[in-house]
Length: 360
Image (cartoon, rainbow, N blue to C red):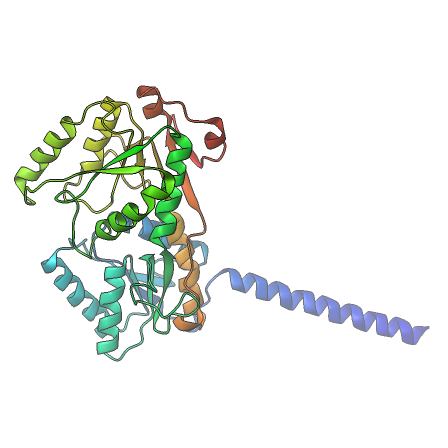
């Protein structure tokens, strides 16, 4: 009997020891414990695309939640935003070269353009510094990664497929406005045609998708070149759109006039038609509110926090090629009931029930 009691005590001690070890492991896994006293150095995105600031805010928040305190466990290399024009792209390339020369621990970019530059320059320098991109679009098709399972290089990130994201936006639109048959949009002359901006690819996929949802795309174009006269041309085109000329309106990201979404929103309110936006970054600068009836897209702050988890995996020893490319964890539906009331539009109850944020 005493022998059995000794065995029981031994098993009890072993069980307690296992629980203690497991507890230590769980606790240590919650926060970063650097292998040295030196903090990790992360170069932040430089190209001035609209989502950049939101991505960085979410990323920093996520890093802090994981135990990376700024100035202690992590140092951020930041730079004033660079406009994505030819001169700006060259400046961004030179800046990334300087980060590579510095041997930063991670290069954080936002879009395909930044990822492409960082990949080219790290390869040229023969330095496999990890690159994280949090707003990738069709990375396999664009040749940035070999597959979603493995990039095959030093790039990791969060990606969306344009067909999927635009399809979800249009599906939401027809659920909100089932009677809509025509969809207005500003295209040639108003959107940036370069591959650097998202507009070109967005428009291509939009043209492919509208028919799937029973909609006809009505394009509004201009031949006025970018410059001081374009803003007046934009106002002229929008002022000329009459009520019932189109049934709904959609916004394409990547435009020359920074306040294009605000002017388009004013037109849609005058014409009493729903205005759909692909993400809640298109706001009225004066009010900070969504410039449209609704938006549906991946939240950029959430993508930033999701990206922090990927960065943590790198700092714990994983290779970028071992980490699958991820998709946004969630798409957010934002409804502006103020605008709905102004244009006399009733949002179906089944839509309100699945809305992530309502502006009242």
